[in-house]
Image 1: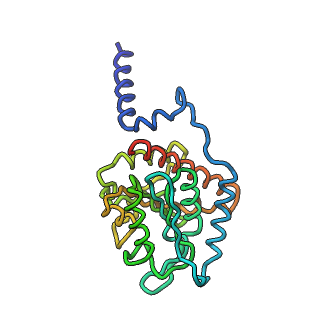
Image 2 (image 1 turned 90 degrees about the vertical axis):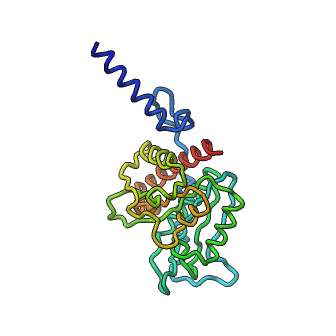
Image 3 (image 1 turned 60 degrees about the vertical axis):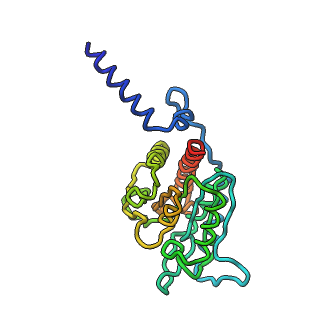
Length: 264
């Protein structure tokens, strides 16, 4: 009798889990709960380290004549990744600290892994794309949104290494999800599956000023701001940091694949 009672509870829990997770997520889980095959190769992290170092080396470097201060990389799936603070932005007439070249390195690696489009800063520009709307970065992003018609936008930022979280998820307190709360659940599932467990929600909600997340949400695009602890975004610092970067890239890649599969 007691066994039948517990069995009903177990059945209910399994049913709840199947509702909570998208069918595509469940389909890619290994048989009998076994792990999935790893996605990321060392060469991808090596390339990311080169990007990180290059962009970090451009602090206090004037924009070369004929060069743009950001770049758009067109992808093949309806997802956009942004890294607006890979170089130091100009806010209220002053240079603000950058979030590090690792943010763009992650965005580019994620684009290459999944086919997502990427917009990132390459030099210190004349504005702050996450604070103002009247700049060329936002104009290019608007054009990309019109052409790609994305089902998701991820805006990648770096957080101080002393922060108590691995990643803070900014959703404008849910408003930026544009009626798709399942995206947040899928993202949390993917992060935790790859061992990224210290998560925060809306510590930096992306609701103040003219953020990219707000910009995308106004256009009807579900968007999430990722404030990533710097310890996950500095693969050049050593083997441990490089592996952390690889794990994060894997988790986010799987999430983007989930999103494009379930919301074609």
